[in-house]
Amino acid sequence: MTDRIIAIDGPAGAGKSTVAKAVAQCSGLPYLDTGAMYRCIALSVIRAGIDPSDERAVAPIAESAVVDVDGATVRLDGEDVSTLIRGTDVSSVVSTIAVHSRVRTAMRLQQQAWVAVRGGAVVEGRDISTVVFPNALLKVFLTASAHERARRRVEQVGGDIDETAAAIAERDRSDSTRTDSPLRPAEGAVHIDSSGTTVDEVVSAICAEWKARSGG
Ligand code: DC
Image (cartoon, rainbow, N blue to C red; front, side, top):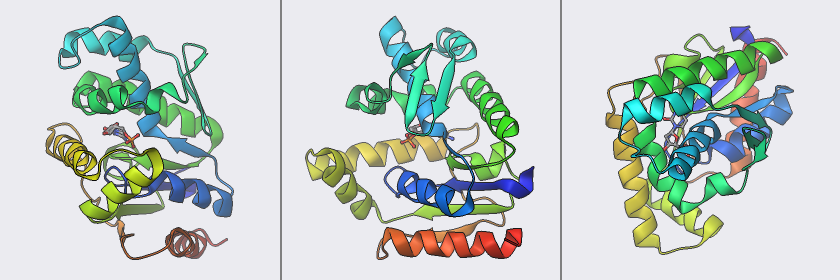
């Protein structure tokens, strides 16, 4: 099955979601946004009034939540939370809950099961090519300059550029310095810096690489 997996990792705002959705189209594979899964757990933690840094309190939520990701539609215990999980309150808590090993294990198992049932996928996140699917046929590390990532985020959801850049920098720091599966390029990953390129150019490069490797 690993020969039907495209793993895309990178920091917030690098363009992973846009690129991964288009790559799903050209490869004919389903698309899984693993950040949405972590966001569901963050939402649950906020609702329960739990301290997000308390692993023993947060872990049971991650281990029991029923998270259902179907394209852009995300359900948490049956409720459509697709919009709610994109809120700034969730964004500011999600990196804190994502450091916990028990949370990561629960998410990893769900992600592996999701892909196994479908026989392959384009999977996007922070640790997909390093930990979740290290044997994926194609591994991509997608990044962009910090300034460009902040600019894109403001264009998408509004807000102040300096505050957005600071929030992104803090999330980068937390995601790449945690002990359990930090964000870093995997061995054998194709590095793409999307700063000066269009989405189409990035997508074309990944699709061409996929076709060459998969023989299709
Ligand atoms: O891609 P995103 O911004 O929706 O991800 C939200 C957070 O979830 C991100 O700050 C770190 C965490 N995450 C993770 O730790 N591992 C993943 N595979 C995906 C996301």
